[in-house]
Length: 260
Image 1 (cartoon, rainbow, N blue to C red):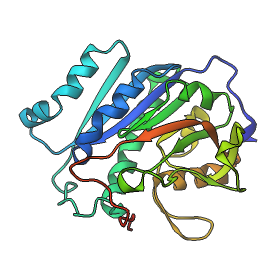
Image 2: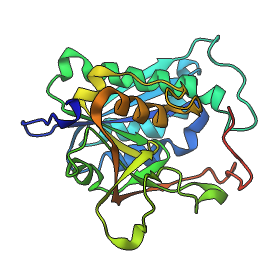
Image 3: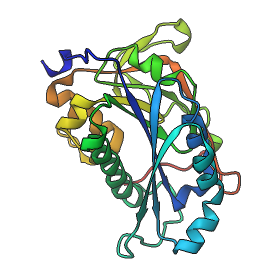
Image 4: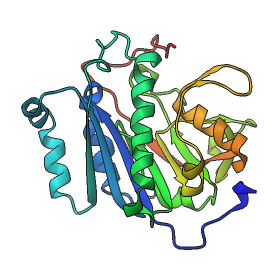
């Protein structure tokens, strides 16, 4: 029943980008891309930092300058991390235990901002990974699917650039077939759009699957929860691609794997 509900008013979309000190190299890719997106009225940038104010202003100078001079309406939310949260970063950047508790907290901060009284006119929240550049028409294409949760296709970075990270089809499909959309079990946030009705009902989490007990990162967990909540299958638009950028000073190796 929930999945059949549709907004009757004109969609109004807020985009959200989450940045951390850990990924400063890639901070500008998603922000610059978001400023060019068709169909987006406002962009929320959530920054988690453990830097003192002066160091933060220096390290993020280019980002802050871009935001202040952009024609897009930007809101900046700087999350000053507590020392108890900012543990020593693992050498393996794929360490999920380290990453996910921060990502999920930041996602829920974006959700709370979107749900606030001042933003009640927005109908959709569109997440953009800070190290990706979705096409300018990504949002309008995802809205055309009329799904409570819809995402795009994104490939890996570094030596994993050939890996299809974000699309797990329920049925095999040839991406070159030209079909517009495909039902999927999981995808990741390189580019995905969520209706207000879903955000009203559920927050973000990571942890065990309610179905089979496997450990899930934030995006697969959200998709599973939305299906169990009655919103039906999630879909990916096969015409929405996001380029994934890597830090040339610390490239992701082919042997690196996400670890819980």
